[in-house]
Image 1 (cartoon, rainbow, N blue to C red):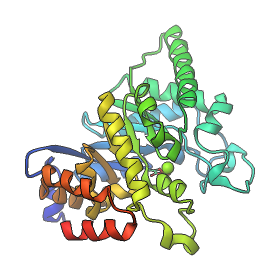
Image 2 (spheres, rainbow, N blue to C red; image 1 turned 45 degrees about the vertical axis):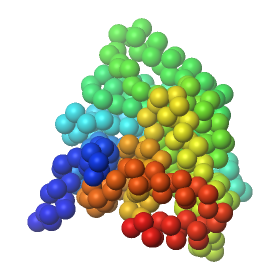
Image 3 (cartoon, rainbow, N blue to C red; image 1 turned 180 degrees about the vertical axis):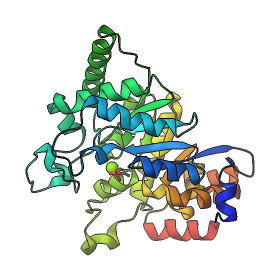
Image 4 (cartoon, helix red, strand yellow; image 1 turned 180 degrees about the horizontal axis):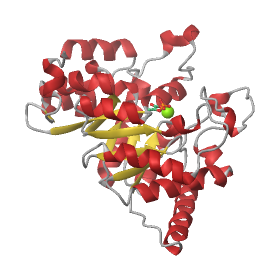
Length: 320
Ligand code: PEP
Ligand code: MG
């Protein structure tokens, strides 16, 4: 039986002063996609594609990837599907990829670093995403970018894939190409990256870990892991300003987007799309309906002057 909030979640989230905020789902499978829709998702802001490599003896073929993406897109009734390229490494281990153990996996061979050095993994995925984008609104998102150089290399591989598909007369669309901002380097370089990206999505899970030098999975330092630390918030604010200056949309798909306390800050910084675990969509939409963007901006002004996390928490708590 559906509760009242979940029923209401099918409606858009409008702030008190009438600004529409898209609340999308983070998913890692077809079933989770259906669940996101049942919880009122305005789209899928993050499809983690790692599921295609989990418990597999062989790499997924281009056709298989295409079919898996297509079946998700087809459940979205015209809503946008943001497909993130493979984000292996860190704490995510997939034997099928044959990658060895590392001393510092979060600082190691991860995500696009693997893709750029292994075209037999990256190219079939990009081809599958291009093909999927011929069938509906699809966005392509690269994780763990730290520099414009990487983005250019990725776009060059994408252009190669497009040329191949066109040569083969295989239909392909023209997806928006964006990046996750989840490294301090990307946030610092946001102005430059914004000139070469169609959108940004802020990944606060990794951004917090890398900014504060705190392993996101290590309980010994969990007390130091705080996305509301002013160091993290200032990087988020820089990213939003850069995106606004260059006129590209900026969203957030890290866990901070699912924290109701943070919503006024995020809206005050200008985020127009939040992507969260499906079960969080109804409540986040309801919280957004209760806030006003002008007072959110005032709150951000104060929070960005805080010199410690305790100050941020006090201001955010008082604003509730
Ligand atoms: C993030 O880092 O915030 C993010 C959304 O990516 P993941 O959690 O998959 O690393
Ligand atoms: Mg991440």
